[in-house]
Length: 396
Ligand SMILES: Cc1cc2nc3c(=O)[nH]c(=O)nc-3n(C[C@H](O)[C@H](O)[C@H](O)COP(=O)(O)OP(=O)(O)OC[C@H]3O[C@@H](n4cnc5c(N)ncnc54)[C@H](O)[C@@H]3O)c2cc1C
Image (cartoon, rainbow, N blue to C red; front, top):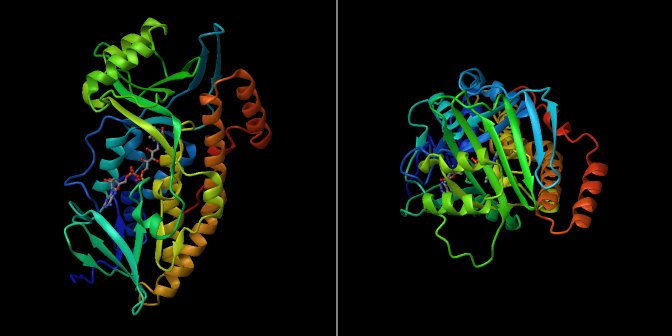
């Protein structure tokens, strides 16, 4: 068995959450190593994420907010356009709200880490507990294995670490999303607005990164047994344009001119709010964070921010409880820290995922009666629909 004493804290996955966890721990003086299955940093995709005030608070704690703000302009107005009804509404945005290129976020987190923190080409195959040492044994597909003191699974919705914790499998919704970026070399005229166009069961969202670049997404129902090759950007473009042939010309032209390498298609996956409420998210010195814990639909643009919040809470508790007088990791301390981390995060992610789930049900509902029913339920349960943005994950 290959073992390396430096690998006491192992994080699986170098996505947003894995890198942010390593950075949060580093800022608290805890060394970790991140094992990523890809051969290089996954910073080439053109996707973007909306980041609200709660996410920026976490980025502040991680020390990367200022750098990221330089390239992500604030969005000042929310606009909803109902094409069937021919009406629209606008409201001012009273909190920090920006669109971030995923690769900018990944690069900032990665660049703030000490060199060699991330090991590429390391795909986790399995994890089990060594009953003699009570340490987790993690095995990679290249046949190597290590027995670190601590394992934090940040490997997204298909998490092997979450399976080890016996968390119920994630589910697919009846919706899918196409995303892309469109560059307007001579500038666009969309102002600093986040606009959503609704028509039947289709939603197109648009927001700007800067005066030239616009992010957009299109949520639409999944067609069972769809045989199209959604890995081909031109298939994505043609299919989306066909779907939106009665949307305003500015929307169609945005899709037509989108950068090919930015186009992506994904079916929406989620962990149910009740599985989050009931699930066991830590066992000894093993836990999960980010999508591995609470993958949710993109309807409120909160999945990534919730993962960033996790990392601050996790590192804070680990630094407070998981180190001895010589600042060395203690198994008992980390176990206690993870229990508190899960306790602190549970109701936050249950609420976020429930609100997201109900919002998704409204988008996907086939009849207006069910839409109204879900809307009433959502309004009763979440009187302040923006309350989740006020959340503060606290100081690192
Ligand atoms: C369409 C869409 C739109 C979204 N919009 C927003 C938004 O606007 N705002 C927002 O905040 N969030 C948004 N999200 C959610 C956000 O993208 C995710 O919550 C976030 O990317 C999760 O980060 P993560 O690091 O937890 O997981 P991931 O990004 O999935 O990263 C997991 C990493 O683990 C690696 N990995 C996987 N398996 C293994 C293994 N076995 N061994 C080693 N490495 C492994 C992967 O290669 C990857 O690098 C959106 C999601 C979708 C699908």
